Image 1 (cartoon, one colour):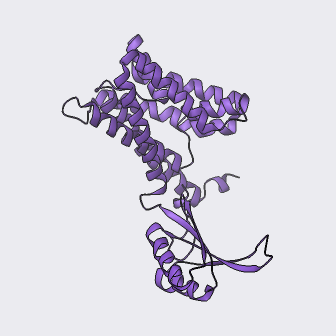
Image 2 (cartoon, helix red, strand yellow):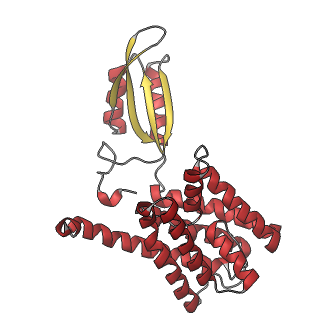
Length: 300
Protein backbone atom coordinates (compact mmCIF):
# COMPACT_ATOMS: atom_id res chain seq x y z
CA UNK A 1 0.00 0.00 0.00
CA UNK A 2 2.75 2.44 1.00
CA UNK A 3 4.73 1.44 -2.09
CA UNK A 4 1.84 2.66 -4.26
CA UNK A 5 1.77 5.96 -2.39
CA UNK A 6 5.51 6.69 -2.57
CA UNK A 7 6.02 6.11 -6.28
CA UNK A 8 8.22 8.41 -8.35
CA UNK A 9 5.16 9.81 -10.11
CA UNK A 10 3.37 10.61 -6.83
CA UNK A 11 6.47 12.19 -5.31
CA UNK A 12 7.04 14.26 -8.44
CA UNK A 13 3.41 15.38 -8.47
CA UNK A 14 3.54 16.33 -4.77
CA UNK A 15 6.70 18.39 -5.29
CA UNK A 16 5.19 20.14 -8.32
CA UNK A 17 1.98 20.79 -6.39
CA UNK A 18 3.94 22.25 -3.50
CA UNK A 19 6.01 24.52 -5.77
CA UNK A 20 2.97 25.80 -7.70
CA UNK A 21 0.98 26.40 -4.51
CA UNK A 22 3.87 28.15 -2.76
CA UNK A 23 4.31 30.50 -5.70
CA UNK A 24 0.54 31.02 -5.85
CA UNK A 25 0.30 31.75 -2.13
CA UNK A 26 3.18 34.22 -2.38
CA UNK A 27 1.46 36.03 -5.26
CA UNK A 28 -1.86 36.10 -3.39
CA UNK A 29 -0.33 37.29 -0.12
CA UNK A 30 1.61 40.02 -1.92
CA UNK A 31 -1.56 41.19 -3.70
CA UNK A 32 -3.27 41.71 -0.35
CA UNK A 33 -0.46 42.85 1.94
CA UNK A 34 1.64 44.67 -0.65
CA UNK A 35 -1.07 46.21 -2.84
CA UNK A 36 -4.66 45.96 -1.57
CA UNK A 37 -4.35 47.14 2.04
CA UNK A 38 -1.73 49.92 1.57
CA UNK A 39 -3.92 51.52 -1.11
CA UNK A 40 -7.16 51.29 0.88
CA UNK A 41 -8.87 48.98 -1.62
CA UNK A 42 -11.27 46.10 -1.18
CA UNK A 43 -12.15 42.99 -3.17
CA UNK A 44 -14.73 40.22 -3.32
CA UNK A 45 -14.48 36.85 -1.62
CA UNK A 46 -13.13 36.01 1.82
CA UNK A 47 -10.34 38.53 1.26
CA UNK A 48 -12.97 41.26 1.00
CA UNK A 49 -14.75 40.15 4.19
CA UNK A 50 -11.48 40.09 6.12
CA UNK A 51 -10.55 43.50 4.72
CA UNK A 52 -13.83 44.97 5.94
CA UNK A 53 -13.60 43.32 9.37
CA UNK A 54 -10.00 44.49 9.72
CA UNK A 55 -11.14 48.10 9.33
CA UNK A 56 -14.11 47.63 11.67
CA UNK A 57 -12.36 45.69 14.46
CA UNK A 58 -8.65 46.45 14.11
CA UNK A 59 -7.85 42.72 14.26
CA UNK A 60 -4.80 41.57 12.29
CA UNK A 61 -5.74 40.63 8.71
CA UNK A 62 -3.93 37.27 8.67
CA UNK A 63 -5.63 36.20 11.92
CA UNK A 64 -9.02 37.01 10.43
CA UNK A 65 -8.13 35.05 7.30
CA UNK A 66 -6.96 32.07 9.36
CA UNK A 67 -10.26 32.10 11.25
CA UNK A 68 -12.43 32.19 8.13
CA UNK A 69 -10.30 29.57 6.38
CA UNK A 70 -10.69 27.10 9.22
CA UNK A 71 -14.42 27.80 9.54
CA UNK A 72 -14.87 27.10 5.81
CA UNK A 73 -12.74 23.94 6.10
CA UNK A 74 -14.87 22.65 8.99
CA UNK A 75 -18.12 23.54 7.16
CA UNK A 76 -16.87 21.79 4.04
CA UNK A 77 -15.95 18.64 5.98
CA UNK A 78 -19.32 18.53 7.72
CA UNK A 79 -21.54 19.42 4.78
CA UNK A 80 -19.64 18.10 1.74
CA UNK A 81 -17.52 15.34 3.27
CA UNK A 82 -13.86 14.74 4.04
CA UNK A 83 -12.98 14.00 0.42
CA UNK A 84 -13.92 17.52 -0.62
CA UNK A 85 -12.33 19.04 2.49
CA UNK A 86 -8.94 17.46 1.69
CA UNK A 87 -8.62 19.84 -1.27
CA UNK A 88 -8.68 22.78 1.14
CA UNK A 89 -6.26 21.61 3.83
CA UNK A 90 -3.02 22.77 2.19
CA UNK A 91 -4.32 26.25 1.37
CA UNK A 92 -6.05 26.59 4.76
CA UNK A 93 -2.73 26.05 6.54
CA UNK A 94 -0.27 27.56 4.08
CA UNK A 95 -1.86 30.74 2.73
CA UNK A 96 -2.56 32.50 6.07
CA UNK A 97 0.97 31.57 7.21
CA UNK A 98 2.44 33.26 4.15
CA UNK A 99 0.14 36.24 4.78
CA UNK A 100 1.74 36.57 8.22
CA UNK A 101 5.21 36.38 6.67
CA UNK A 102 4.43 39.17 4.20
CA UNK A 103 2.99 41.29 7.02
CA UNK A 104 6.36 41.05 8.76
CA UNK A 105 8.30 41.77 5.57
CA UNK A 106 6.12 44.83 4.89
CA UNK A 107 6.85 44.88 1.15
CA UNK A 108 4.75 47.12 -1.10
CA UNK A 109 4.58 47.28 -4.89
CA UNK A 110 3.89 50.96 -5.53
CA UNK A 111 6.17 53.79 -4.46
CA UNK A 112 3.20 56.01 -3.74
CA UNK A 113 -0.55 55.50 -3.43
CA UNK A 114 -2.19 54.94 -6.83
CA UNK A 115 -5.64 53.36 -6.65
CA UNK A 116 -5.97 52.62 -10.37
CA UNK A 117 -2.63 50.82 -10.64
CA UNK A 118 -3.32 49.07 -7.34
CA UNK A 119 -6.70 47.77 -8.56
CA UNK A 120 -5.11 46.45 -11.77
CA UNK A 121 -2.09 44.76 -10.20
CA UNK A 122 -4.08 43.41 -7.27
CA UNK A 123 -6.29 41.63 -9.80
CA UNK A 124 -3.25 40.29 -11.68
CA UNK A 125 -1.47 38.90 -8.62
CA UNK A 126 -4.68 37.54 -7.05
CA UNK A 127 -5.63 35.90 -10.35
CA UNK A 128 -2.16 34.35 -10.62
CA UNK A 129 -2.62 32.92 -7.13
CA UNK A 130 -6.00 31.35 -7.90
CA UNK A 131 -4.92 30.15 -11.35
CA UNK A 132 -1.81 28.38 -10.04
CA UNK A 133 -3.76 26.71 -7.23
CA UNK A 134 -6.64 25.65 -9.49
CA UNK A 135 -4.19 24.35 -12.08
CA UNK A 136 -2.99 21.71 -9.61
CA UNK A 137 -6.51 20.60 -8.68
CA UNK A 138 -6.71 22.37 -5.31
CA UNK A 139 -9.23 24.89 -4.01
CA UNK A 140 -8.65 28.35 -2.54
CA UNK A 141 -11.23 27.66 0.16
CA UNK A 142 -13.04 30.96 -0.35
CA UNK A 143 -16.40 31.87 -1.82
CA UNK A 144 -16.04 29.04 -4.36
CA UNK A 145 -16.32 26.53 -1.51
CA UNK A 146 -19.12 28.48 0.17
CA UNK A 147 -20.99 28.55 -3.15
CA UNK A 148 -20.54 24.80 -3.56
CA UNK A 149 -21.95 24.19 -0.08
CA UNK A 150 -24.96 26.41 -0.83
CA UNK A 151 -25.58 24.65 -4.13
CA UNK A 152 -25.31 21.10 -2.76
CA UNK A 153 -27.29 21.72 0.42
CA UNK A 154 -29.91 24.30 -0.53
CA UNK A 155 -29.88 25.46 -4.17
CA UNK A 156 -29.08 22.48 -6.43
CA UNK A 157 -30.89 24.09 -9.36
CA UNK A 158 -28.62 27.18 -9.37
CA UNK A 159 -25.17 27.16 -10.98
CA UNK A 160 -22.10 27.64 -8.79
CA UNK A 161 -20.86 30.56 -10.91
CA UNK A 162 -24.12 32.44 -10.30
CA UNK A 163 -23.91 31.84 -6.55
CA UNK A 164 -20.29 33.06 -6.49
CA UNK A 165 -21.34 36.15 -8.46
CA UNK A 166 -24.05 36.96 -5.93
CA UNK A 167 -21.78 36.39 -2.90
CA UNK A 168 -18.90 38.45 -4.30
CA UNK A 169 -21.33 41.11 -5.44
CA UNK A 170 -22.81 41.43 -1.95
CA UNK A 171 -19.34 41.65 -0.39
CA UNK A 172 -18.35 44.41 -2.81
CA UNK A 173 -21.61 46.31 -2.21
CA UNK A 174 -21.16 46.15 1.58
CA UNK A 175 -17.53 47.23 1.17
CA UNK A 176 -18.75 50.14 -0.95
CA UNK A 177 -21.13 51.23 1.82
CA UNK A 178 -18.23 51.42 4.25
CA UNK A 179 -15.26 52.47 2.09
CA UNK A 180 -17.23 54.48 -0.48
CA UNK A 181 -18.68 53.88 -3.94
CA UNK A 182 -15.40 54.51 -5.73
CA UNK A 183 -13.68 51.71 -3.82
CA UNK A 184 -16.52 49.37 -4.75
CA UNK A 185 -16.10 50.29 -8.42
CA UNK A 186 -12.36 49.70 -8.22
CA UNK A 187 -13.12 46.35 -6.59
CA UNK A 188 -15.19 45.42 -9.64
CA UNK A 189 -12.23 46.22 -11.90
CA UNK A 190 -10.02 44.04 -9.71
CA UNK A 191 -12.51 41.15 -9.89
CA UNK A 192 -12.70 41.32 -13.69
CA UNK A 193 -8.90 41.37 -14.06
CA UNK A 194 -8.63 38.55 -11.51
CA UNK A 195 -11.03 36.39 -13.52
CA UNK A 196 -9.21 37.01 -16.79
CA UNK A 197 -5.82 36.33 -15.20
CA UNK A 198 -7.06 32.97 -13.89
CA UNK A 199 -8.00 32.00 -17.45
CA UNK A 200 -4.60 33.06 -18.80
CA UNK A 201 -2.70 31.20 -16.07
CA UNK A 202 -4.73 28.01 -16.51
CA UNK A 203 -5.13 27.97 -20.29
CA UNK A 204 -2.33 30.21 -21.59
CA UNK A 205 -2.27 33.34 -23.72
CA UNK A 206 -2.45 31.34 -26.94
CA UNK A 207 -5.50 29.34 -25.93
CA UNK A 208 -7.76 30.96 -28.50
CA UNK A 209 -8.44 27.66 -30.20
CA UNK A 210 -11.50 27.12 -32.38
CA UNK A 211 -13.15 24.03 -33.79
CA UNK A 212 -13.96 24.30 -37.47
CA UNK A 213 -16.57 22.00 -39.02
CA UNK A 214 -16.97 21.89 -42.80
CA UNK A 215 -19.42 20.15 -45.09
CA UNK A 216 -18.31 20.54 -48.70
CA UNK A 217 -18.45 18.85 -52.08
CA UNK A 218 -14.69 19.38 -52.38
CA UNK A 219 -13.85 17.19 -49.42
CA UNK A 220 -10.45 15.87 -50.54
CA UNK A 221 -9.12 19.28 -51.54
CA UNK A 222 -10.10 20.84 -48.21
CA UNK A 223 -8.59 17.98 -46.20
CA UNK A 224 -5.35 18.19 -48.16
CA UNK A 225 -5.16 21.94 -47.60
CA UNK A 226 -5.66 21.62 -43.84
CA UNK A 227 -3.16 18.76 -43.50
CA UNK A 228 -0.42 20.15 -45.73
CA UNK A 229 -0.82 23.94 -45.65
CA UNK A 230 -2.35 24.64 -42.24
CA UNK A 231 -0.65 21.56 -40.76
CA UNK A 232 -3.48 20.60 -38.46
CA UNK A 233 -5.12 17.24 -37.90
CA UNK A 234 -8.46 16.37 -39.48
CA UNK A 235 -11.29 14.11 -38.35
CA UNK A 236 -13.95 12.86 -40.77
CA UNK A 237 -17.43 12.23 -39.41
CA UNK A 238 -20.33 10.81 -41.44
CA UNK A 239 -23.51 12.85 -41.03
CA UNK A 240 -27.03 12.47 -42.41
CA UNK A 241 -29.33 15.38 -43.22
CA UNK A 242 -32.62 15.04 -41.32
CA UNK A 243 -34.65 16.48 -44.20
CA UNK A 244 -32.81 15.28 -47.31
CA UNK A 245 -31.58 11.97 -45.82
CA UNK A 246 -28.35 12.52 -47.76
CA UNK A 247 -25.17 11.14 -46.28
CA UNK A 248 -22.25 13.55 -46.20
CA UNK A 249 -18.80 13.58 -44.63
CA UNK A 250 -18.12 16.44 -42.22
CA UNK A 251 -14.55 17.68 -41.74
CA UNK A 252 -13.58 18.62 -38.19
CA UNK A 253 -10.32 20.34 -37.26
CA UNK A 254 -8.93 22.36 -34.34
CA UNK A 255 -6.83 25.41 -35.11
CA UNK A 256 -6.15 29.02 -34.18
CA UNK A 257 -8.57 31.79 -35.08
CA UNK A 258 -6.18 33.11 -37.73
CA UNK A 259 -5.93 29.65 -39.29
CA UNK A 260 -9.71 29.32 -39.27
CA UNK A 261 -9.94 32.41 -41.48
CA UNK A 262 -7.38 30.94 -43.90
CA UNK A 263 -9.48 27.76 -44.08
CA UNK A 264 -12.62 29.80 -44.67
CA UNK A 265 -10.98 31.74 -47.49
CA UNK A 266 -9.75 28.54 -49.15
CA UNK A 267 -13.14 26.82 -48.90
CA UNK A 268 -14.95 29.88 -50.26
CA UNK A 269 -12.73 29.80 -53.37
CA UNK A 270 -13.39 26.18 -54.28
CA UNK A 271 -16.95 25.65 -53.01
CA UNK A 272 -19.35 28.57 -52.63
CA UNK A 273 -22.06 26.19 -51.37
CA UNK A 274 -19.98 24.76 -48.51
CA UNK A 275 -21.29 24.90 -44.95
CA UNK A 276 -18.75 26.04 -42.33
CA UNK A 277 -19.20 26.48 -38.59
CA UNK A 278 -16.63 27.80 -36.11
CA UNK A 279 -16.89 27.14 -32.37
CA UNK A 280 -14.69 28.58 -29.63
CA UNK A 281 -12.70 26.02 -27.60
CA UNK A 282 -11.28 26.94 -24.18
CA UNK A 283 -8.23 24.70 -24.42
CA UNK A 284 -6.90 21.54 -26.06
CA UNK A 285 -5.02 18.77 -24.27
CA UNK A 286 -3.63 15.65 -25.88
CA UNK A 287 -1.68 14.35 -28.83
CA UNK A 288 -2.63 15.78 -32.20
CA UNK A 289 -1.12 17.51 -35.19
CA UNK A 290 -0.07 20.98 -34.02
CA UNK A 291 -0.66 20.35 -30.33
CA UNK A 292 1.55 19.21 -27.46
CA UNK A 293 1.47 15.71 -26.03
CA UNK A 294 -0.68 15.42 -22.88
CA UNK A 295 1.42 14.82 -19.77
CA UNK A 296 0.60 14.85 -16.10
CA UNK A 297 2.40 18.17 -15.77
CA UNK A 298 0.06 19.70 -18.32
CA UNK A 299 -3.16 18.63 -16.61
CA UNK A 300 -4.58 21.95 -15.51
